[in-house]
Length: 419
Ligand code: SF4
Image 1 (cartoon, rainbow, N blue to C red):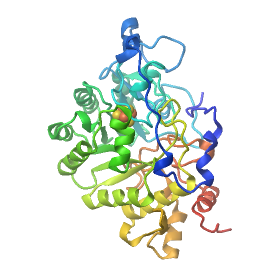
Image 2: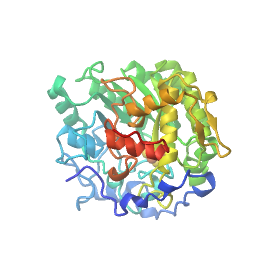
Image 3: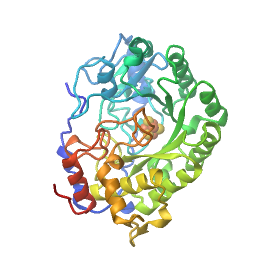
Image 4: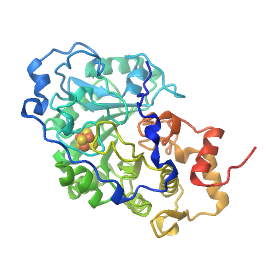
């Protein structure tokens, strides 16, 4: 078994590859259909009430058991393979360095974000624990079993970081605390630091403070959309979802105050209709606040309200990836860059030789996220093939090799250096 989701649509056609950017007007999500009452709120799973027994592998032709955090959490296929609870291999990766845990409930996430495979509108089609998310399945595992394995492995653990991903659910705040406590009771958070991928809609400043007091290291906010209009369209009123841009910023600024410089950040999905100038201005704003941005390349998740839309063209993605790296780690400011009339990067604000040097190092094109133990600009959270198929990698979960860099240069329209 492979941890790579086999997409029936090779590369999803990657229709964006030859285009130059995903413009706002062309990225309208579908409207969610009404959900029949008898399947709302996880009723199918709750009524059948199958007791969970150990690890649950999604879509395995068995009735989905009734699993709940904090006793159960879900984890990516990559994390499950690395933890040794599921067989499998990852294309060109030995393991993942971040143990991503996702809260789980029969009712699932109560939000309806347009790009997300976990969204509420899928209730009729698929039970929560069986939904694909960032292109892969997420096995459900007893929290105690996870802690036992990581505590037993001690210094031999492959993980550099653990991350708790909250979802929009009334129990999410309390259960994040419970999962964090279960972890720190057995595992030293100084040895494997913990990140929180938060859900601001249900949180107050006191919740942020509590997580810090309990030993969380980094707090991130999944803004995902780069502008208020895009946020509203993909995560708010536009798709009958509860999220609000000002609330996300309120909690982001709480995180800045509570967690401090370099210990907070925001996730941003590139290519949902924002301009490159808009997303890079947001990246700059986060750096000016003392935080970081973690970028994802938009990929049309199967079953989501945006699964009919094109993936981010590779040239748009590479420009933003490179420019974001320069802002986050090379001291370049967005004001030094030049943009064309459609907001695309026309000049990175750096002498050509320096730019070539950074491109050649390849780190700018790796997955961005909370750091591991190798270096500050290399993320523990490598999310193998979470935002692209392995045949046309967007975020490299490993150091790109010479051939990868030639392809990246072509995508950036930089002359390929031979030899
Ligand atoms: S809140 Fe998070 S998990 Fe829920 S639908 Fe939105 S992006 Fe998906």
